[in-house]
Image (cartoon, rainbow, N blue to C red; front, side):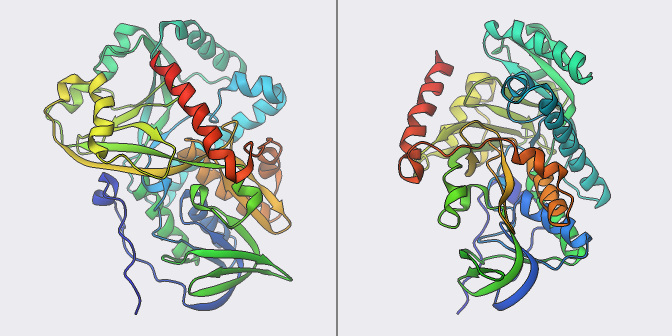
Amino acid sequence: MTTALPAHAPSYYAATAVGLRERPRLDGSATADVCIVGGGFTGLSAALHLAERGRKVVLLEAKRLGWGATGRNGGQLHTGQRRPQDWIEARFGREEAHRLWSLAEDAKALVFDLAARHDIACDLTPGLIHALHRESEIADEKASLEHMRAEYGYDKLDFLSREELRAAIGTDFYAAGSRDRGAAHLHPLSFALGLAAAAERAGAQLYEGSPVKAVRQGRRFSVETTTGTIEADDVLLAGNGYLAGIEPTVEARVLPIKNYVLATAPLKNAAEIIPGNECIADSRFVVRYWRLTADGRMLFGGGETYGNREPADLKGFVRRYMLELYPGLADTPIDYAWGGTLAVTRERMPMVRRVRPGLYAATGYSGQGVAIAPFAGKLVADAIAGETDGLDIFSRIPVPPFPGGTLLRKPLMILAMLWFAMRDRM
């Protein structure tokens, strides 16, 4: 007897997503040009772009399309890579930094293009504010904005004084900040489901409830699930934080961590809190991020855990961070609270590359997945079609394994995360 597909996390996104429906499980064996493991932004974008090129594509999702970080994140479309450009320049040199910047701008543009071209209703809204929680960061922020204008010609950044920031985000908790008029926010699960529908229209076959047990390589790849097997010439591993046990060289380089989000009941004064309707992310290592939803709720993310257990009281766990910034919301009901798993790399730069002939991996977005993940899927699709320039740039980014391999990476990373979290509080 076939068991029912699992329900999505009890999130605001799942309750309001456009296009939410079940897909079939894989039943039996089949062949494909490309098999994609994972039904998030990366896998769905790759499926769409490959199918548009005429490739026979099969995508296997263990749970539901958009199940992981794709359907649970803050919905913020940031500019640039996860690391700031001055860090990238120091690490990789000026020319490579410009190449990575151009790719990041292309990634952001791709989201807008996909939403428009496929008529995806995902509440795509411009504007992002970066809030500084220490006065000592102000000089560096101003220098960074000037550097982005002078070096990269990016003129969509505006500095915000403490008073200007307070007026923009409705709290005086922060020292200053900046507004990015080129960034945006969206409903991530609706965006993912829009990509899924577009991929299916292009001819891709998408399966849910089909967890991959192993990927074996012979004359072709054999992707084995609990209910069938796909034989394919190429395989893309796009499961991000949910790829344990499939490919050791990838697993050793990414660490799954859990992050948490809530959504309040609709607010009567939502437009007064964030009058420009931007999303906001602060400068802490353990980032706090928030925005208003299309129906006027406060959607707030904050707090991480690094073990296997989630907090017993998810609403209370995140609510305390929100009330530090907005004590006036103390009596506002919390309608939704959920957690999810994302994947980080040691240096917070993504792992997007060909692992070996025919096997590709795109993972480790470290909180920058709304922009980079769909683009990574396109780059892999391009590379499979023989256009490797974009993938080659990402492939030159070193992604070292975590110390201690899969056995010790988590306890060592927990110690590092706790140190940075303590530094945030101090």
